Image (tube, rainbow, N blue to C red):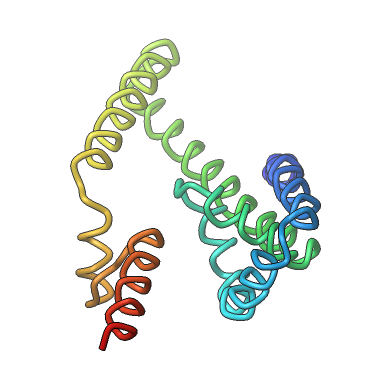
Length: 168
């Protein structure tokens, strides 16, 4: 079952990837050159990053779309994404089985069903609130011990520095 779930998820995400893969041919020469420069840096980390976003609840579009635009290997993309989804599907199946057995030891089947729904809703609410309250940028800066600047801000800073250097 986990293999089928992972295969279906990888195929679905593969469609997103392939659309951006073919759209990249319509980009301007300047943008394609920039993507090619970025691709040399990104390709080193693409495989583990794809696996990570596929195996966790992290959003994967910020990884999938740029890799498609950079024409990252479709086979490597599918393999890494499939393995990530396979990991989470199998882990979910084992955890679900464990939780079901645990609940059946304490409750009747009807009560277990209701308890599992209540616990699922509560966990969803708690995790959502944590994600809304935690500043992921600050958390990443603490973990990586460096300031993280969004891409748009990097460009503004770069342009401002170039203008300052020209004026001097």
